[in-house]
Amino acid sequence: MIPFLDLKAINAQYREELITACTRVIDSGWYIAGNALTQFEQEFADYCGTKHAIGVANGLDALVLTLRAWKELGKLKDGDEVIVPANTYIASILAISANDLVPVLVEPELATYNLCPVKTEAAITPKTRAILPVHLYGALADMPAIMDIAERHNLLVLEDAAQAHGAVFDGKKAGNWGHASGFSFYPGKNLGALGDAGAVTTNDDELAETLFALRNYGSHEKYKNLFQGVNSRLDEIQAAMLSVKLKHLDTEIAQRRKVAEAYLKGINNPAVTLPLTLNSSPLTRENHVWHVFVIRCEQREALQQHLLEQGVQTLIHYPIPPHQQQAYPEWNEHSFPMSEQIHQQVLSLPMGPTLSMEDVQKVISAVNGFS
Ligand SMILES: *Cc1c(COP(=O)(O)O)cnc(C)c1O
Image 1 (cartoon, rainbow, N blue to C red):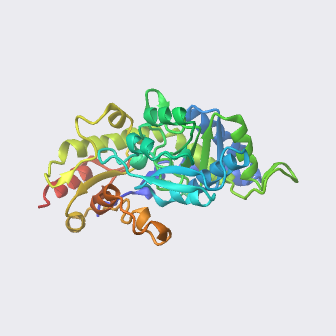
Image 2: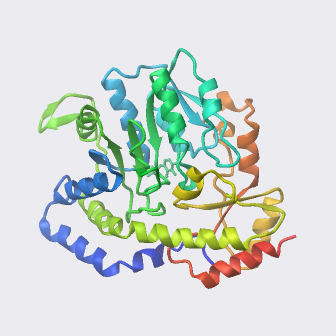
Image 3: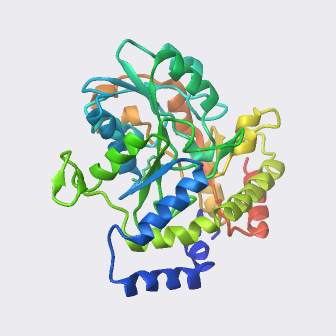
């Protein structure tokens, strides 16, 4: 079976480095908020080109705590509206509702799966205070257009960059476009820890200070509490694992691009829609880091079954749109046709830096053999 993602093979490449880094932490006797975290935060900020990176426990917390920080700083208040793509992973939306803010779902563009700037601007009301674009599947959202809208309407922008570490357009990386960005280092993400981890990046000193406190009981200084904070820390062992893996991220992105190029060139089944076409905009073509390679097919279930029989494991990102989830009953009767179509038709092919070209060819043949 060709696995969808071979995490074991990915981490096996760095086995010795990871063990050395882990051993260093074990022997240091210091396991929370120490040098390994500070070092990784510096390295990740440098990588993204931002002034700050603040490590937190996971990607959801990165988003939740950033919105929370903006509330503490008086930039957001209960009931403010935050625009978010209707087809995102549920975590982007959870972060908004967890802060008593109102998620306003906006349909994506079918060609990119990312937030549509025209529909975004049309969704702005007097209560809109922020936009939360998601770089879904590893492709940067149309950030030049979104930042332009945000400036004209005086809105905050929080990027959900959980799937797009290293995506870059016009020399600017994911995580350095908005006023702040949330990253996840969940093991299966392009930059993955060996457990849970996340980070916020920002160029805003005040926001960074607030986040450093919020993640640590609201405390800047031991036993002094500025805020009613939480415990959301990125521990030393995961920080050390991430410093090792960050060094290899660009190589891994290049390997993912090779797989994607082979799929784009090789798949020619007319029943299948590819994620990019030759006339896709440069923004989408050049920056994609291929967290997942998503195709569309009207007979998605039959295609998935066919691929399984051919020894190809696939996944669906995602099977149920957020507005149809039980968690948000108030949206269940709403209609988001584009998002619904996406959720009914998408299928993610095997993707990863260790996938062999031989296996890629097998996947291509299996997809092309479907009728
Ligand atoms: C993974 C992911 C998150 C949440 O990250 P966790 O570390 O799993 O909490 C948020 N948004 C998107 C788009 C994601 O893919």
